[in-house]
Every structure is written in structure tokens, then in C-alpha cells.
Image (cartoon, rainbow, N blue to C red; front, side):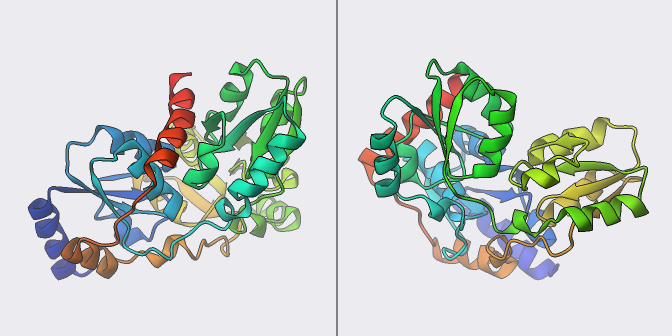
Length: 301
């Protein structure tokens, strides 16, 4: 890391009264300048309680958008607007509306990894950590789950009595993991625990010792007496796990599980974002209010 860039970022952050929020999948040097590192839900919660005027969000677009939904009066900046989420883009408001019309009695549960207009058409949001609790709380016996079919399938296995209509969306990065490759790594590290994100395919989830959101991976690694872990999620996660758990070893379930969008944010772009007060996130107010309702219902559970 360039000390000069780091110092400039720190000075500008103070001058702008800004806070820097960084997702677990970001580059190590970006994680190192963060005020807070976390998953999308943790960072959304932090953004809603921060006292700073400016939020610099180092993640992908829907995450910065969620911060803006929760903080309409604050300036939310994204260092690179091209940092999108392919899975979030796999469902559009028009497609969701058509699905709702096809299943009029179903509740719409939308993963937080989604755009504001899709959240606005949903009954409630969920995260990979609280999805089971959210669906159990609903009176409806039919669930439209969007956009991630693998997280939806995981939740459905915990609640088989409900009928699920799973949208055919997925995270391309989590598709990298294969059963054959994971079995090979397990063979080389027989004492290791396998921690798998629920965005992975069912065949990968079946090999897990624990299916975890990224925040749950952090807690599991801290509390477990195991010294070796095979991690099946985006490789940026291994940096934080290693940093916070000295003496423990973290092995990627596949070293190619890299989200190109998460890696678009660099120290230079964070600096330029603070210098130029760009790129600002804006949301139509009617959509923001409806999306906020879906998020609030999740938080209230």
C-alpha cells in the first residue's frame, strides 16, 4: 500500500466528514483503509447509524444503493460505478411483476443482493444469514424467492412445508466451485472444516460442515477449535479471515473464485472519489420508500 495515498485518503476523509465502508470481498489494501469491513447487511446497519455526512461504499452497486435507501439525507459515493452485480441484474421489475401475477397468493422474498426497484416490488428482503427466519415469519404458504435460486433452495430445504417459486438467478463467482475440485482439496486436508456460502450450488452445500454467510464464517472461524478451513466463497474473504485468526489456515475452495466487479475498487479510485465527491448514488424517492419498507420488515423480525 502506498503510504502517500493512504495519508491523502485519511486527510480527505476527515475534511469531508466521511466514513469508508468496505465489503469482505474487496482487495486487501482497500480493506486496510476501511473504517468498517463487513458483509452487505452489516455495512447497511452501520450506514444507518453513522454520524458522518458522506458514506464511501467500497462494494458493488446494490450495496451502495441500500446505504442510500437507508440514508436519503447523506451523500453516498461509489468509487467505481461499473462495479455491478450480475445476479442482481438477473431479475428486473417487469419480470418480477409478471411472476407476481402468475402466483398472486405468494409472498415475494427478495435477497438483499438486488436492485432498489426490485426491492420496491417485494414484500420483504432477506440476507443469506436470516433468510430462514424471514420466510418462517410469513403467513403465506407460497414464496416467490428472487434472485438467487441456490440461496432459495437452501431456505426451502429448511422449510419444506412451504411452496417455493425460485427465480433462475445465481452468482457467477460462486458457480466456480465444483464437487470434484472440493473433494480433491478435502482429500489433501482431511482435518479441515468446509465452510460454504449458500450462493454455491447444492452439490457444494452438501459437502459443507457449515453453510454460512460471510459474517457467519467470521464467527465460526473464531469460535471453532479447528486450525484449517476450506472456504467456498469469493477469495477476498480469506484475507480478513487470516488477518483476524492468526495461527489458523484458510484454504480457498477454488482460487479462481474472484468477483471482477468487487476488484474494480482500488485505493486510487477511493482517493479520486473523495477528491471529486463522486460517484453519487441517487434513487427515485417513491422507489426508495417502497424498498425501505421491504428492508424495514426484514429488520423488524
